[in-house]
Length: 195
Length: 253
Image (cartoon, rainbow over all chains, first blue to last red):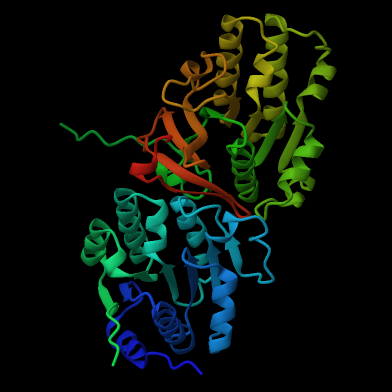
């Protein structure tokens, strides 16, 4: 049984509001635990629905792992930018998965996200971007910085909570500086301490 | 001295997500607008959504199809959630095959002269007048213009058509097929359409690392302040959506 990070639920309950933009700093080994620790209170505590932008891993893999942890994924639309990268990748048993051809199609990701958020008008909404590091493989720093600037402001204007996952020591410095500037909150689990 | 009140023309609200904001409220009523785009750029879908949104508001709409049979057109647009076949059944969206229209008019020649052009304009405006059409699409005007042998006659045709439709209060989108949307491209196939008409919407693709992203750009629209930026465009089941294109990614690789 995976034990989630209860400190994150407490921080979300105390500090964030519907238009918060949260920079989520993770390490390479704990990223999924942290993401699950964010999703659980958003879905089961705040009863929010939302969009999960999958740039690091395939949506199917993420859904299966969340299911194993016991997190209900039916209220999440997964925008998968990974699976169209190989033949057969877009075959999925899940109805809540949509595909974008490539992580370089940043505007398509934005439009798909806006489209699916429009389906959740009866509840609070969130967008989780997983991750800045994966997007930076395909997009040069200045374009990615511009995208994140637009991304954060677009969803804050619509009162949609955003959580932007990054591994800080592997994020381009210019992009990280922009995240520091534009995000309203920080969940910092980027330094993994081994006792 | 009395202050000069700011004059605003009434608008035809397209209902297309993002486009009315780009146009600061919609297309000025009675305008004839060129929708110029490369193949697969979303011209037909966007124009059909324009008609559907008008029909849903109770407006009579007409679509003149010159590139594909109307049956095929309707089959293609039925996949979209925004389209409702009942609007056709109720007579709010009227779809005409240009080939059938030409047969009615006895226009069987491979090229049109001034008499043919006048007959074509009259038949279209008669339909608009009879049904009370306020939104019209011709898809595509390029196909019609291929039958017109000189630039002067094309200019005459578009000028007469635009003037007649404007007089009838009909807002029209004329689809134009172009082969390139680059910086040096013409906005129309024959180079004369763009000067005569009231507005130009350009649809095309930006190539980014081997992927094509659709874009839309309002190059010209008389009677309104408007954005002239490029907007990324997606065709969703609910219709067209647009968002500002990233400035660092707006040019082809």
